[in-house]
Image (cartoon, rainbow, N blue to C red):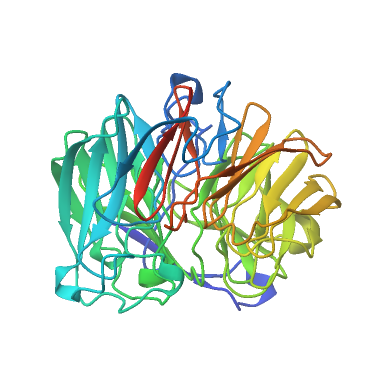
Length: 442
């Protein structure tokens, strides 16, 4: 299949709307609610990608544990052979996870770059034992060191129930069957960054969509069966978030991603740029977006950042026509949750929990939580409760309501660092750090 490519000239004249289109590469793909979208039901006990079935951080599970610790409520705790910031996914009767070994593994010494290996593992949810472990050779040289010890396995796998799709930065995108047989590998660029690479694969129809901002300042769509490039969109600057697929008011589906200074909408089947909205949020964008009824909510930016809401379905520069509100409270790393007309998130510094009115952006509460700091992981919403985990293992459970209510403060501190959030399936919570994978439940 011949690839289509679009390059985004973000500083193009206003008369050209979102950008000047240079026909050199790409096209886009569609979302969970669209015809042909890939989605595994939340009710089926599956957690098939970053932030769950719809990429929104929401689980349909009920009866999940509220109080737990390293000594209470842990079904099993297994030491992992290596480190990583990716989250576990649950597909069928297996947990799938990535990690890295051999080089710059926290607690294991520096090692040599030539020894850096990425891994994809399948784990038995009954006892945490590893069923299979597949090595992926790293394309070197890699980043010599990565700030905040995010490491070399930060992207969460995605699955359509038949295959696993895994992203390892400049080493490429890989497809495996569920028994661990590698099917293909694709290159999406070779640039590096001191923060590492983090965005996770998004699946739509027969496409795997990758935010390769670090590797090539582009979005890439690959054929799920072959790994061949179907489309490419350029101009993806300073963007670490995983794109989301949004159903518009008109019944279409758009692929939406936040970059430095803008939120962008694409046709997910062709990669064609559709619209752009100024964020007035400075610097890089890490938190993933959430959406409800055709409105996308974005937080981000360094040093507290900001937030905004933009209605999808526009064309060209929609800053004046489709941006519904903007605010000066946000988060540098952790993503938000949408629930019943409100947005919830925690700032990564200072243990500040927020609730905002989704219609206006007005802050409903801003609450500092004692002894909680550095919340990098994105939260989980399940059964009317919000689960936040800090990097030191303190876990906060709040009521998902516009009045602040702290239900529990739990302690999973074990000396290792938590960079990824909770996954939920079959009545259990799963969370990993740089050393262990926890299964929490009754």
